[in-house]
Image 1: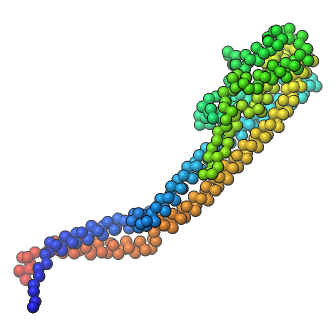
Image 2 (image 1 turned 135 degrees about the vertical axis):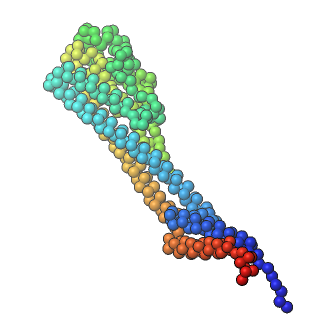
Length: 352
């Protein structure tokens, strides 16, 4: 027995509209994949594997953040090396002046000016900063480590030198009577009261606001290294002591024998400083290399992670292009069918 059934043009039209909506969504996704080269929705496409790509991206963000920090560290180390280069040249020049002064080839005024210039250069370089952070202040990087020795009013260091001299000899360094000070007495002063000014606790309370603790930086997931030098390093203490001997102890008014005692002591200190500066620079150079090596390792890790993520998330352009063509064709057919359904009329049917 044959039965009749009824097909509603409205239901066909509704189904066609739903099909168009679905095809339009697929078209948008396909176009997005063609433009980005990646799956439109990684979570839907990869399913449970999505967690792998999320984890790898987190790892990559972490190590790239470390590399960004490392680049800042390298900038600070480069600036520190530049300051140390300047100090090395200044100290070598002062040492030459001291050696010449032992043979009277350098005048008193020239030697004093050399010491003052050396002290000023040392202060300027130890007070060097980058991006608002003082390079030689250790973890007290927001505090300027050195005061101006020749400032007005006199710095704590200048006052301490004058006070120690007066306590020892009963007169100030600029008193003409200092000409009567004997070489042995001056040597005793230099080796004891004067030397104590550059040892703890006097150094930290009088000369330097830097921290003894250097800046430490994480240069990789497994490495934390010291990435700075502080103004409290013994090299800079000896340097300050040598400059202050010539510039702060009434050198011009002393008798020649006492002058030679000071010159000899300052020469020995300065000679040691030139060697110590080289060691400080070498230490920073080793740190620079470690940071650079860490960056190279990070680049390798990023490259590996990028390739691994791409293997999961990248599309096959040829396949997606074919899919895009198929969707476009199906969408055009659906548009055409919808247009035909919209033009159906019972009057047209009955008239036939």
